[in-house]
Structure formats: C-alpha cells, structure tokens
Amino acid sequence: MIQFLLNQTLVTEESLDPNLTVLNYLRQNKRRSGTKEGCASGDCGACTVTLGRVENGEMVYETANSCLTFVSSLQGKQLITVEDLKQGNKLHSVQQAMVDCHASQCGFCTPGFVMSLFTLQKNSDGWQHKQAEQALAGNLCRCTGYRPIVDAARQACEQPEVDSFQLQSADTAKRLSALKNAELQTLTFKGNRCYVPKTVAQLAGLLLEFPQAKLLAGGTDLALQVTQFYKPLPLMIALEQIDELKTCQIAEHEIVLGAGASLHHCYQLLAAHIPPFSEMLERFASLQIRHQGTLGGNIANGSPIGDTPPMLLALNASLELQHGQRVRRLPLKEFFLSYRKTALQEGEFIRAIVIPKVTPSQTFAAWKVSKRLEDDISAVFAALLVDTDSSGVVTEARIAFGGMAEIAKRASHSEQLLMGKPLTLASIEQACAALEQDFKPLSDFRASADYRLQIAKNLLRRFYASRSGELTLLEVSRYVS
Image (cartoon, rainbow, N blue to C red; front, side, top):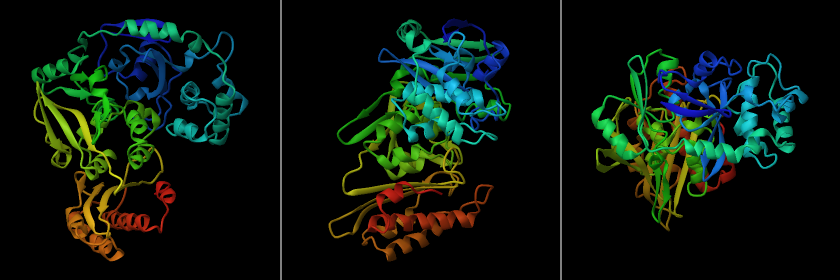
C-alpha cells in the first residue's frame, strides 16, 4: 500500500503494478491526459510533473519526469499536474505568462513547460536567468522557439501571485507528515512486488532475503528497462524513503555523501568544496533527472559513460558497502570490474561515497565532451587531480576517463610518466602519448575511436594550459564541447 496527495486529495493505492509509471498512472488510472508522453526516456520533458515533499517542516517542490518515475516513489508526497494549477476560474500566473508571451504553438510540450515554470517560480526569489535556463533545459519545444518561453519564465518570476498552493502550504506539510511512518510497505500486483523500506536495517534484511531484487533509487536508469526495453521488473526494493541513505557530512578531511543523495543535492553541497565537480553536475542530464537520480545509482549501474565515476576516481574516492550488518570500505578504483560488472557481492549495497577533501595545493579539473552542452551523454569525460611541490615537480597525479573503455578507469601509464617530473608541456606530451597504452576506445554513434583518443589527449593539454595560465579559470569553467 502507498499513500500520497494528488493535489489535495488523499489517495490510497493497495494494488498497483510496481512497474507502472506515474505517467501511465495519471493517464490510464486517473484519466489526466494533460501530462504527455514524448520519449519515455526522460529526454523531452513533456511528461514533467511536480512533486512536493516536506523538508524541515516546509514544503519543497521539485520537477520529475513522470515517464521514468514508478508509482512507489509517490509514497508520502504531493503529486501536482497541469490540471491542478487553475486558480478558481483563472489561469495560474505561470500559465498566464505562457499566454501573454505567446510561448505555446502546437501545445504538445506546453504542459511540461508549465510545470517546470511552476516549480521554478516556487523555488526562485526573483528573476535569475541561469536558474531559468537550468529549470527549462530538460524541456524540448520543436515549434515555438525558446525566447518567448524564457520571456514567460521572466514574467512568472518577476510577477508571482499568491496561489492556492502557497495558502495551503502549512496544511499540506502537516498532511504529508502524517503519512510518514517507519513500517515496511509493499506494493504488489499479479506477482510483481516492490518493497518500500524506511531504514537501512530493513533494506539490509530484505537484500539478504531477496538478493536478486533490483534496487530502485531514482529510477532514471532502471526505469528504461520497462519503458524502452519492455522488460518488467518482478521484484524491486525502493530506496527513496530511507533518510539514512541521503545523509551527507562534511568532516575535517573528507566528505561523506549518502548513496541515496540526489544529484541535485550533491550539486548544491559540493559547490563550496569541489566547484568543478558541482559545475559538471549542471550538465548531468536535466534538472528533472538530477532531482531524482542519485550518486549511488550513477556508480552502481557500472556504466562506462557515467559522469560521476571519472571525477570520483580522480578524487580517490572510496565506497562504504554494507552486507547485513557488516560494512566495508572499498576504493572506487577496485569497484568497476568489467562492462556493467562491479565488486558488489550478493546482498550488498552502496551505503555512502567518501571523498578526501581537495587541498589548496591540489588542482582538480573535469571536462565533459558531448554533442550538446546540456542533457546529453558524454563521448569522453576527463577528470584530473595533480599536486606539485614548491619547485613544480608532480608529487601526485590521478587522471581518469569515462567513455574510453568498458569501465571508467584511470590512465595509469600517463600518471606514472608525470610523477616526479616538472609539469611542463614536454611532460604533458609524454603523458598524451602514454594514453595509447592506457586505452583502446571503441567507435560508436557518439564518436569514433580516433576521435576519442585525440580528445583525451587534448584535454590533458587543456589541463596544462589552465595550470600555466594560458587559459583563465573562467574560460576553463565555461568549456563547451
């Protein structure tokens, strides 16, 4: 059974297929056709809805791709769709802004844009162009053009009106808090099951009993098995309700990020501690995906083109892995074994990611090369951390790449060639040549093997240029593929 608010209506569902997405639930079960299916892969934003949750006693609103969100994720939340926005007989101010700015044409994508604008308005304190760009980057429009939509965003942020959601905010938070409980919940339908544990102990026990279960965190990758490959998932364990997995701590010498922390939360947290990491997360898919996708999920799926593993490898991160009551720490460089195969043992899960703090003497940089600036998968991802002594000799070098092999991995030969040498153009060129020993990249529709290798070499050269002053830090942070 799961319970949530559909706008202000309490909904209790005792028998739903755990493989049912929120998109299909809305359209098929609730006959709400305003939410559209465009791609069923989280790329177009036509299916965008807003999810409200309680944080520190206050309502927090986030966008989500309903096409990739399973119904179990609704537990204890408020689901808001485009049908809910009308204010009596009037349009909501974000809908009126779309009308006033002529920001809709065929209208198919419009509900998704409206929900992104609604959530932007709830989270903004006046007009900020960058914030609006981030909020709209996950929504595609094929006919209107984006300038009138951005104009609508400006009007919505500059001229917000008090709405029913604001007036009912305290009551909504109280009602959602009443749905919170520590009991293990289960959603079942025709043999398909999804367990919804509330504690790490419950999760550990379930995995010992059902080691074959699929762990559902944000679901932004796992859901594709259902929506794109039409493969039902008979047994899932949903992690979203486990607050312990979302806990993050900044210690004296290290940063501990809960495996269930969303990528958006990591982006906010790391901005003050590892700015290049945070900046790269701005280019990780869309805001809808970052609201739900988790750091642990991006590691556990073992993808060779994930954006966070190369950065974490360069930062010498390690993982806290739990099996039953036993917790062990494993260096991330030992976690990836082969294509989508990891060192996770049966019944084991990632509990946290531990990152040593970057010291003032260390230089950390990361770059993503893709066909589009935002909401695209990397052709090559490079992350580098280099430390030098007072004379300019390299005392530490960690160079990691994604998209260059069947796993994200470090360039060991290049690292060794730099160690103990002054960081000069000559030593960088030697490291570039050594990349041919470290990687034999493949050719696919994103890039050829030769292109990948050349790009990897050029990114090493770019690192040297940024260190030597040939490129300013501002130019580096604005690097566009």
